[in-house]
Image 1 (cartoon, rainbow, N blue to C red):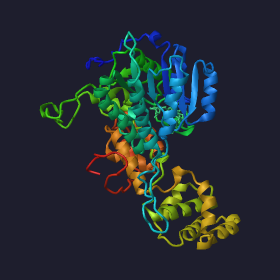
Image 2: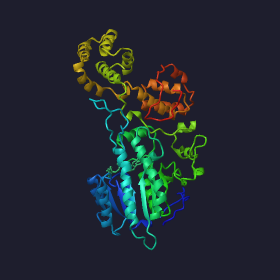
Image 3: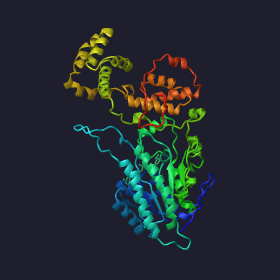
Image 4: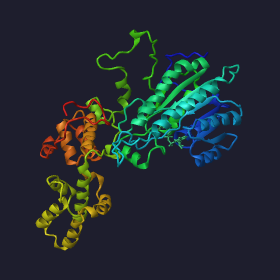
Length: 510
Ligand SMILES: NC(=O)c1ccc[n+]([C@@H]2O[C@H](COP(=O)([O-])OP(=O)(O)OC[C@H]3O[C@@H](n4cnc5c(N)ncnc54)[C@H](O)[C@@H]3O)[C@@H](O)[C@H]2O)c1
């Protein structure tokens, strides 16, 4: 039975010697792209043989050629959610690797993306909630479970050589296994699960001579994110970690055979020049079930005193001045709005129609007019008012033609054309969206008063992406800066309450 020093963590100055990786047989799930592909390149460069399992057959075959052909690597088309596929992957590694063995297993395949599991989607006929799509949770949570199950089986059955053959599992979790990521409940839950899996197995796998560790990357530019999401993140000031550093962290975990039960966070190089550091959030605290004295009961409302220190590097400059904030990673605009306000769609249809009819008029003008008119005949009433005020005779024919379209049979046709013309930022926002934005901004800009934040939001039609840069500027100066000019703006009346999918424990005074 292997034994590992529980207090042995990866120090900031620690380096590793990859020469021991030469001749090893490595399995990588999700190795046809992004991080997995970088790991494959670096293991092959270190002299290892790599077996890649990926759902993307075309990329997988190309990757093997790029890595130097079947002498260096092999590929199995594999859906990590299929037990049989994963079994085939492990058998291929045993069959094709020069050593006819398996030394290192990387459970890396994963997806992220639109997560509407808690959105209010209903059957049109019955009104019953629709069954949610749980692909993200399954691929990111159940996929690694299968991989680790097979790794424990095959690694345990291999003979130790005279030097004591290392048996190593590394799982790609994420810093979303440590931080709450609003809007991504499945991804968040699955990454916490991977970390939990490591916390459990690190106590029992050593009995089989197997060690298990976790990689927890910060944002890294890979195809897992669309260009749109990357641009958004860049716009918020998010800095990306380097893919090469993620790979160095994996090679470090694989090379240092004394490491078990550690999690390496991949971070930006200004946080750590090496680009990765030991999270220390997963230091061993395990206790026997009977040993209640050692259970870390929260004192003064906090479980771990180290938490605040660990996340300090990720705070924004503005937040650091206020002493509390962490970069928010959530843009409510990236997610579908809840369909909790039936009138919203009609309001936005009317707004889009009016913007289409009167392209020279600011959408804000129509928002104000429409808010004061009851449901029926909105477009007609506003059109009449506009024509009275502005007397756009030349447009009269067109206007009246379009106004007639508000009759119920033409409504759908109108919606299709008009909705594409109106930018999202100008539409009426749902109460749930406004609450979400408000909570995220309150959370980030704790050194600004709630009334200032609400005023900026109102001025920007509650748009998160447009309000945030203005608040950043305000926070960077004094929070008292130019409040007088903001106060002259109208203040929105935002309903109290918390948004269930955003951040719990918001300000109770809302
Ligand atoms: N890129 C980041 O910012 C980041 C941050 C933290 C964690 N991660 C994690 O890193 C891992 C790799 O992500 P990436 O950024 O390299 O993404 P990527 O999209 O570039 O690569 C993921 C690979 O997994 C494969 N894959 C997807 N579903 C699969 C399935 N069902 N079966 C087998 N293969 C499947 C894809 O085909 C792809 O080749 C993921 O677990 C991801 O959650 C990424």
